Image 1 (cartoon, rainbow, N blue to C red):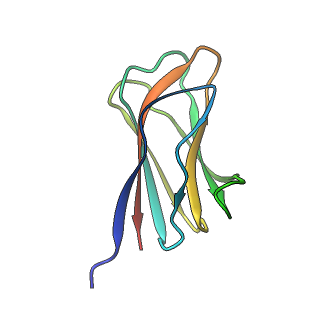
Image 2: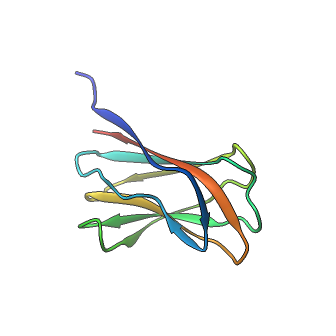
Length: 111
């Protein structure tokens, strides 16, 4: 029996600055998730931290605990792996004033 897998593009060609987040994704059926965040253009300013957030309803968000550095150069990729996350997932980032990054965020889920 093959495991069930899905790849979802949750952010495509969005320029993140200030406080930004990917689209939420309902993933309660999966047992593991991997986020890939790729910089589509050279980031401007200080590198930001990304964090995985979970939600019981897709409205109220709580930091899951996984944090990672967002890509520091064009075409670089950051990765965050999570398990035991409930139903809803997203990535959130906070940028310093004047900093920004144009991203592609994909979520890979496996049952």
